Amino acid sequence: MSRRRAGLVAVVLLSMSSLAVSTPAVAQSDRSGGAVISLAEAIRLSLERQPAAVAAAGAVSSARADQLQARGALLPNVTVNGIFANSSNQRFDQATGQLVSQNYTSQIQGSYEVFGAGRKFATLRASGADVDAAEARYTAQRFQTILETTSLFYEAAAAADLVRVAERRQQRAQEQLKFAQVRLDLGTTTQSDVLRAEIEVGNAELAAVDARASLRTSELQLGRQVGMDAAAHPAPQSLPDRAPELPPTEELVRRALGGSPSVVAADATLTSRRMTKLAAYTPYLPTVRLSGGYDWFAYDFPPSKQSWSLRLTASLPVFNGFQREASLRRAQVAQRTAEAQARDAQLRARVDVESAVQAIEAAGRRVEISDRTVQLAEEDLRVQEERYQLGITTILDLQASQLSLADAQVVAVTARQALGSAVAGLEAILGGFITQESGR
Image (cartoon, rainbow, N blue to C red; front, side, top):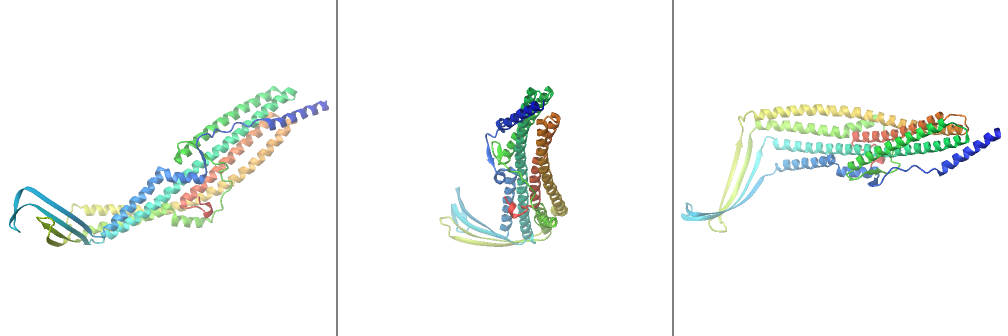
C-alpha cells in the first residue's frame, strides 16, 4: 500500500512539474495603440499642453505687459500729426489776406506729467509685485500640473502592475485546477476539490477583467493629461521602491516659508495691494502737466510757416462724486484681505510640509512592510502547495494562501503608488524638488 501511494505521489509531482513548465502564460493586457512614456516625458508634455499651465504662463506675460505700461507712464507722450485740408469753397485767410481753399499742416506735440503725487511710482511698484505674484502662481501651477501628472502616471503604472498580479493569480488558479483534476483521476481527492478550483478560476478571471478595464481607463486619463489622442502607457518598473532620504523637517519648513509658490504669491499680492492703496491717496493731491508743440503750416506744399506752443497745467479735483473715497475704501479692504491670506499661506505651508513628510515616511514604511508580507506569503504558498501535493492539507488551505499572496501583492503595488504621489505632493508644496538628484 505504501508502494502504491509513493507511486501516486511521484506521478502527481511529475504532473505539477510539467504544468509549471508547459502552462502558457495568461495573455498580457492589451497595450496596442498609444505610446510608452517615462515619467519625465509625461511631465514635459503636460507642462507644454495642459490648459491650466498654459494659462498660468499667459498670466505672467499679461502681468509683464502691465509692468511695461507702468514704466511707459514715466516717459513723455509724443505725437506727430500731418493734416491736409481742402474744400469746395474758398475762405478768407486773415494772415495773408488771400482767398484759399486748401492748406497743409504738420505738428509735433508732447506732454509730460511733472507732478502726480507719486501715483506713477506706486503703480510701477504694484505692477512689479503683480509680476512676482504671477510668476509664483505659475510656479505653483507648474508643480500642481507635475503633481497631477505624477499621480495619474503612478496610477496607470500601478494598474499595469495589478494586471500582472491578476494574471499571475489566474495562471495559478488554472494550474491548481489541472492539478486537482490529476489528483481526482488518481483517486487521491474528491470532486469537491475540482469544483472549488473551478470557482477560483472564475474569480481570478473576473479579477483580471476588472484590472484590465481599470488599466485602460488609467492609461486613457494619462494620455489626456499629456495631450495625446490615445492611451499613454507608463514605462515598466516605474513605481518607486523606497522612500527618498528627506532633509530635516525644519529645513523643509524653512524652504517652504521662503520659496513655496503659495507663500511667495501671497506676499507679492500683499505688496501689490499696499501700493494700490498708496496710489488711492494720490487723487487728493494736485497734478501738474507740461505740454507743448511745434507746427508747420502753409497753403502750398511743403508747409513753411512755423509756430510753437507751451502750456503748464495744474489740476486738483475738489469733488468727484466720492470716487476717491470709494477707491480708497476698496484698496483698504483689499489690503486687509491680502494680509490675512499672507498669514494663512505661511501657516498652511508649515502644516502641509509636516503632513507631507509624515505621509512620505508612512508610505515608505508601508512599502517595506508590504514587501516583507509578499515574501512571507510566497513562502507560505510554497509550503501549502507541497503539503497539498502530499495530500496532508485541504484545497481550502491552499486557496487561502493563494488569496493571501494576491492580496499582499496588491497592497505592495498600492503602497508604491502612494509613495510616489506623496513625494510629488511635497515637491508641489516646496515649489522645487526635494533634492537636486530628484529633479526631473
